Image (cartoon, rainbow, N blue to C red):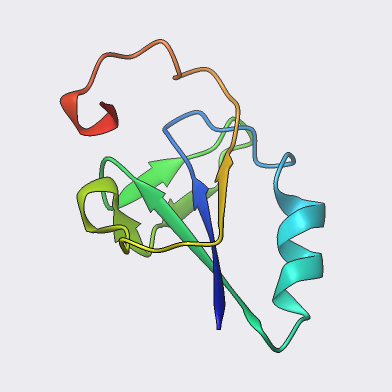
Length: 81
């Protein structure tokens, strides 16, 4: 099984990963997961998302890493280094 990990931070752009995640999620050999620096994040559009993994718990091997844009990429959090 291939793993696609989508990284979401608070104020993430909820529309950016929609098409790619929906296409991958239809494939039997892909698993779509989400990760962040905290267990729950809120999008620009107001959606609250419970993530699958904390950044520190992302599996060692993933096949695709997707960094979703938004208003929070300028934050300095040691979990992102």
